[in-house]
Length: 239
Ligand SMILES: C[C@](O)(CO)[C@H](O)COP(=O)(O)O
Image 1 (cartoon, helix red, strand yellow):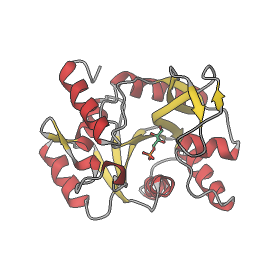
Image 2 (cartoon, rainbow, N blue to C red; image 1 turned 90 degrees about the vertical axis):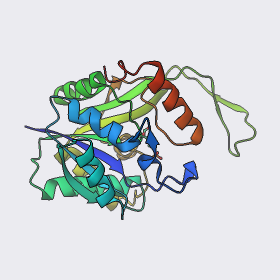
Image 3 (cartoon, helix red, strand yellow; image 1 turned 135 degrees about the vertical axis):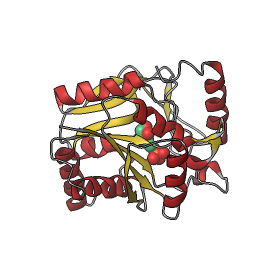
Image 4 (cartoon, rainbow, N blue to C red; image 1 turned 180 degrees about the horizontal axis):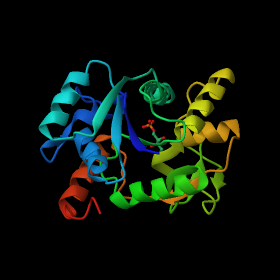
């Protein structure tokens, strides 16, 4: 049985408002996606990596992978019109490439470059044990629900809330079956693999403790936080 990382880099990064897609922006002299790939390259239990790549950026990615010695990068798959479709393309690609039903797939956002070795290890261990592993952290803030983003009368108790991150890890056969079932049920734009499983009511998902440092770079502010985190503890971020 093998463990594969499936890195989702199909988005164009509109929320960042830059010319270059955010996953290809440089931080510390290296594209964000390469920082992410380095973490999986370094992990001894990751056998190979597939990237769902934004169309037109495949050659750029391959040349960066060569430059930074990411030799576990084995496949590139075509990005879709949204995250759900991109993940589906990647899963079908892995299956077509000969990956086995029981192989583990760690689905991870390309723009979460500070993923730690421990979180990758825990995803593999928890998925092997329970079948589903979702990285998440407890909610520390008070939560209000708002229809318009400006006003609210409703608070949601935070005690039971989990903020999900990636990796989200599954056996290939289970997550592929979930995507096929979603298509039959007209679920086409679920925001994450875990929300897809939840919407379908398929299975209990076990939560792997994540980290505030496992930041998702979505906005310019996130980019500033990423740069600060990298400079604070360069030696420690891959631990
Ligand atoms: C998968 C995810 O990172 C979980 O927190 C998040 O849902 C991804 O969202 P995006 O809209 O694809 O950036």
